[in-house]
Image (cartoon, rainbow, N blue to C red; front, side, top):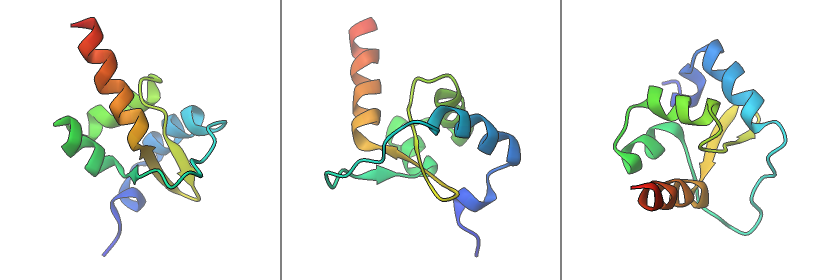
Length: 85
């Protein structure tokens, strides 16, 4: 069976590549989440996670063709929502 990241469309890959090009890969053992896990954590759809990445609100990292979102990015996004509410 194909992994979720392998099934993402070419358009999504293009959008998130632009956002992730210069992002360093966490090296401190930080947890990395894939798009479906991030969506579950935020209780939003995969499409919404991709929109958040393409708008720069979530900064993904790329490992080969895989897209991952550091847990610290998810936590920071949630904190920003709390502050603006």
